[in-house]
Length: 466
Image 1: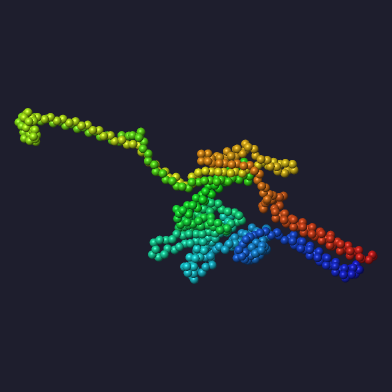
Image 2: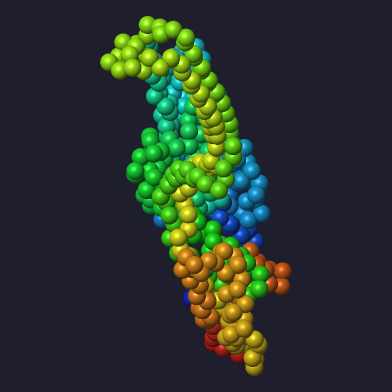
């Protein structure tokens, strides 16, 4: 007690304040280290979905944090992310604003009109299709709009259904031609009497991915279809070249660009040929005629000849006549060989191909383990060019050209640990948490050395010697 009396009231107050501050800091440090690390549950949610997800988390008693400028990022303890996502999925959250067939779970069957039931059925079908499309890799969400016209009374003609789809992509990812066709056929198979040609698709940047055309033979549709087929053909060849060469030069060390000049003219040729050397006897007809006549009259008869001016003189000689006729006729019908051919050349013929291939060099370990770039030799480039020639079906007669260039690729910015990579069994989140602990420990040590220790030293030095 005498010790505390010698300190005085002011020194005791200072000492108590330092002790309280130190205890508060240690409590904060302990709570910070003991609190579980928070991990992202969902991000880029609509306000309505965020509200529903937060309400569900409050019901189950799960801790959460709202981050981001608009609170569209929800963080939960890292060890509960999987369980909470399964719980939210069971509750149909987040729904991205799309209602499925659960819309009928809360409907009142007695007071609902037929019009409302039809509208709810249409909304449910649109919501289910939007959810299915949103589950495709690279698509964040989707909106589906269906037009299902009803057949009017006493009308023989019926308007065909149509659909329009708006896609919200993840980052800079884009769909290829096959994925766009897959979405069209998916929706067409789910809606009666809907054809894939009646489905239009756009993305979040306003780019038209697929057009719904009424007449597939219209010039606009044929022109757009030709351009799409050209791009798809070029992409397929470029992807085939890269896949083939990556087996040798390594993944990500080759880039190929293909420029195809395609012939989209549809030509129909009808040809009829005759072979004069290929004669075949079809039929033969022979006609033989023999006629013979002989007359002799003792008395002069009354005939035309006797009534002619010179008839009396001719008949005075004691008349008689003879006639003989022979005719042979042969008719031969020949069948000449004839070739009739109808040739229809479909569109999409290749007129010319030009291919540019960029190949990275070879890297070896130099002094200190640093990679050293070495260009590829001429023999390797010739082998690569030979592979490309075979892969694209090179034809020199139509003017195909191939250029293989060896240049050093620019280094990637994100070389090192990825989002899921580990080092010494620790993930990126573990390293961040470890760094946070080290920083807090250093701050606590500095507080003790630079604040607590000097204060206590001055207090004890000012005490009178016993």
